[in-house]
Length: 263
Image (tube, rainbow, N blue to C red; front, side):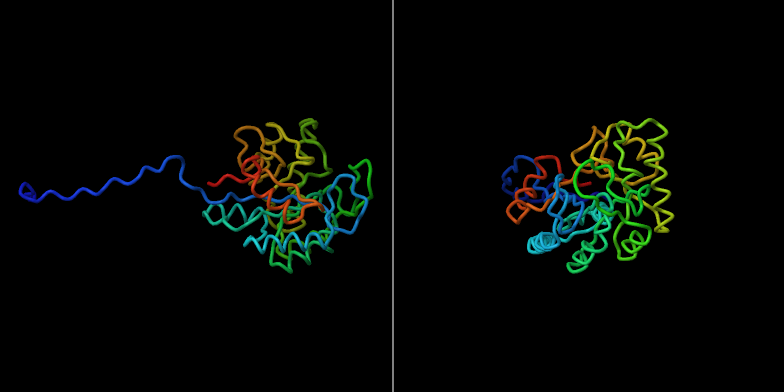
């Protein structure tokens, strides 16, 4: 039966609401910080070294801002659920031995996690790809396992820190695929992340990383169109980054394309 509404009084129409022009306000974009070595090393021609004291102060700044440092794996999992607000990805490139001896205690002090990108073809070796500057020890198998057991994400930086855009097909395959298998055997777990050496990538390198079975890859600046999570941009953090510089970098990250897109 259909109700008879012909005699019903006319409802009072609500007053129109003001039109909200532009896009809806979005939550602050998440970003990923890029570290390398943590040590008291005054000779730093590539600006890749942060002293333990500076790292402590940078993490204190994050905490004061209501931010918590996490691995990229954890950040992407949170983003998939719309819960990335208040999180910052922390990455440490090259797998220096000082990640375990120096950075790890500071991470634990603040309850942070991080991703360490390891060169599985140079275990217990040195930063031989750098033509100048001091020689720095790289993680060995024991150090990698210590990092994983401490709750850190271990991910691949290739085998030998090779520029993938200049590698032939066989070398590209070994640097990307074999490095993943080697690390998985060391940590007895899946290796989800990759990091392009020097931040250099092209469509061919991105495709190789995808075919190797990784779930994401870190770069420095945004990659080729359509790269998505296989060219995650990052913000370089160095010894000179005090609270003022960190705040500026955080604010400029979305404008410079260095922030993660929400999903």
